Amino acid sequence: MKKISFLFLFIFIVSCTSNTIFEKPKDLIPKDTMSLLLQELVIASSSKFIKNKNLEKKINYMPLVYDRFKIDSTRFQISNLYYMSTIDDYQEIVENAKQNLEKQKAVFDELKNVKDSIRKDSLDKVKLLKKKSDSIKKSRLNLKDSLEVKSKTKTKV
Image (tube, rainbow, N blue to C red; front, side):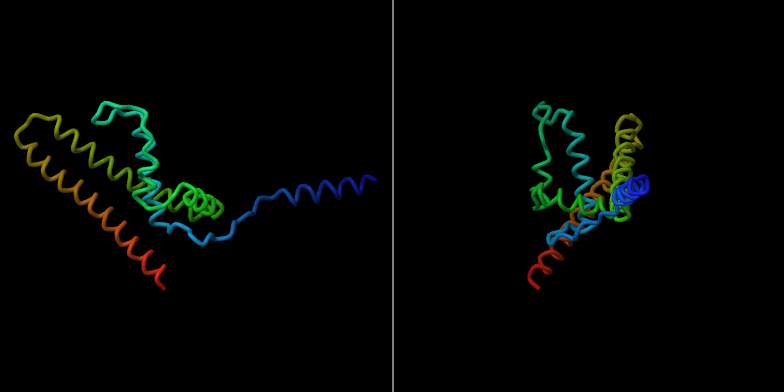
């Protein structure tokens, strides 16, 4: 009886391991787009508690992010679940998103510090930093546009 109990216990413990990797979905969001999407979702979720230009708070910006990337929340959840099951890919995506957010934060913090100073030479720094922030925005838009072109060509083929 003890042997059978130990056998069932052993089988139960071995069967509880979590090596689940889900099947790759048909409409999986590519890694680089997923990284950009996570960046935008972090910004949208953190902006919920900040007043907008109409002095309104607690606005849900998530649907706007989904519309911008032309996806729905279900597709994001399915892709997110798949990437979470392949932890190496997900960690790479999250690290990339984190690095890009830190770069953006550094530029905007520097821009804020320059704007706060009253010195005359800071105006030149403001112009330079605005150019940097504009180039970051353009590069993000160019990357997004190139991803859209890639996805359109894949669907045509």
